[in-house]
Length: 346
Image 1 (cartoon, rainbow, N blue to C red):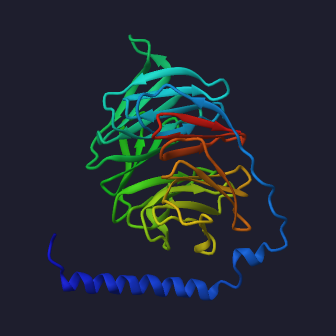
Image 2 (image 1 turned 135 degrees about the vertical axis):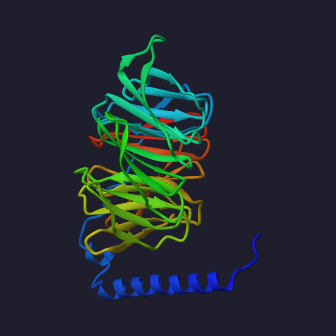
Image 3 (image 1 turned 120 degrees about the vertical axis):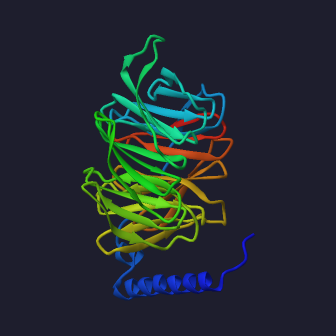
């Protein structure tokens, strides 16, 4: 271990004091908290989602899953070196795509349903065209996006021709897929970029990082618009609220949080009824009223977002839950796990 540097310790203490001052100033301007503001709102009924389908087919840990815009098909990526396109209504496999690297960490499904993307420890992002097949009869590989200096942790399609990625080299990159070139590239955080989420209008997005912060960005401008503090551990997942003015987070510090963009601060903290593990992923119902967060301990916790009340637990997986995706129409939730399976909840 490197010897302690007094100057570095002094700078860290100064930075923490600045952050605390900002948080104190925000708190002083908060005239009411979320629980008080929603005291007259009726409690949400008990959520009774059931595991409608178990999607079996992967031979190793499933690290990521994402719904298509049709709310029916989803893509999953596993350490068995395969992408599988699923029909979540029937549980059938539509396509199996063998990967050049088994170390996939993130997948993304274009909302049009035409393309999927994946990447991970191979330090690149690979794009497949689902509407065209190669000589082997599988989805055609159309792009290999290279040049990363760290693992690819997250990716999302803005549209069929534009992709955003976040990676372990602390960077966010915008890609023009038709021209196979970078439109933007910038240092986004002071640590690995773990997650990103696009706003409903696709004009802004939020990133989360191991530096314990979340940042708001505009797709048309590489400069950071807002920085959100509060977490005491890695921010593993962020998810925009359907209204577009707030977002939720899931963190290693065993909390999920709600941040309001207009008031520039955290407005709610969600914890399990009993001390539990860190959160790995999160999602919101189509109304934004229910918050869901997956854990290291095989379960998904549900809260009433407005009342900040724990609403229930989904159980069924036999290992760590790694990822979740809520269908765009709000009718289903799909989760992936280290138990090699996916589950569809309705």
